[in-house]
Image 1 (spheres, each protein chain N blue to C red):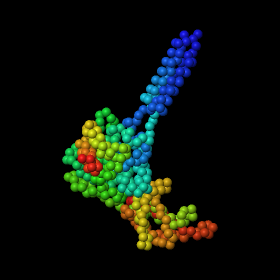
Image 2: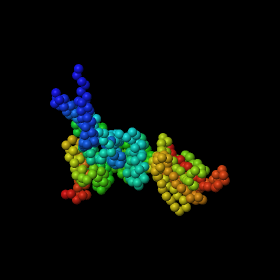
Image 3: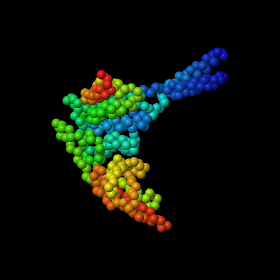
Image 4: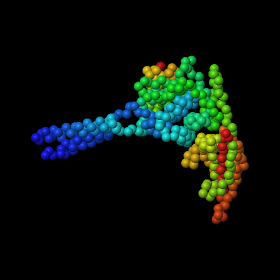
Length: 115
Length: 287
């Protein structure tokens, strides 16, 4: 039964591929390091925005805050801060933190000329 | 007697190899939910700077600790000190001050920080509430920390000592005792550069202190230099090359005893060659 034999081999090959994919994607995926901040999970990104907002509340210089937010890549600082505010609102951050982020967003909008 | 299915086994192994190659190299999982500890070192530095800047603004040490823990540094204090040295080397003095201040606070040597008033009257909970489906990022302590300790590091950051009126008691920053000159040695070592003035600055626990500004004056001139720029020689180490036959005076900018009349000593090697030696000064903050 030559056809059965080749079918058996083909099935073994397919099972091998499936097992390899499952292992490589789920059981032991590639370890990533040296990542850039734009890959951070949304809650960590938002906490970074909150840090920038906390610092802004003291120094009051939107330029410094914009430089701090620039680590997230090509998005505008206002957009990054706004996304942080959206996430913080959606996830019930403390009111004081929301106010700080809102303050930063407003300052960045004024600084960058966004109405 | 049935034969062992070598062909199928080989196909299975080939398939396994192909699957792994695809999953690990050709199309690895997309990274979209990274954690801060996976960031590249320079981005970790920026993350630490942001933590320090936020700490300086709020005085919330617990929150700063929780954030630093996300970076998975083996020794967060050492990581902060090393970063402070890099910032000083890049002349980023304000950031360096903030990082050093956070480091000092973690060691229990912080100065009083008074956070500016919150922008709203609602201050029941100053901690961010974390989403239900993600791990807790920040401690949930409901108190706003005000760090009090004696002044051990002289930050140039003006925000640190803001005397903001508050309805509750406001800690007043206490100026630490001036550093004492605990040792002054004249060195004759032909392996060292001529006229090398070495300064070592220690805190009250004899830990070396980076980022300390040292003022040196001679005749009608003055200059300043900082500890920590040569970490291979110690975090609290700094040096300066003296010109022979000129008397120098050295003092820490933060306030210390003055080492005056420092003239590079004339020395001689065993073979009779003349050269100029140097000094080693050790300053320590009293307990």
